[in-house]
Length: 174
Image (tube, rainbow, N blue to C red):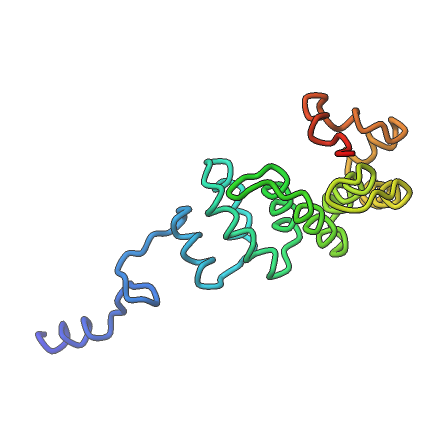
């Protein structure tokens, strides 16, 4: 009986993560950040960046979204744009924001297409090109993005999709 107990204990696996931690955190934002830092940019880990930035941890969200965007997740690219455009976790950078929007648009993401269309129409972070901007908005609308359809219906009047409180931000600098 004693031998059977010893054999059973030896055959029972220990519950530890790859680093040897018994009972590692699961389903926490801390765990997500650890996973992404190790290079695990799964869809669920990347999506958790939304909760991280909404909790005000913008620098951590920025690090997560950066890794996820570089792994090809277009939703993370649009979040990088949002962080860059609003100076969350780093100084405001409209050029970088427009570049992230362009990368998401190039990946076929309708939100990226819409946002890059707005960038082009405004000339914010990129050279102004209203015709190309409208084409990008149209591409997003063709994919079913309701905000893009709303902008089309308003004859591309940006006040339809941008609160007037933000007009100062999008005004030409010259």
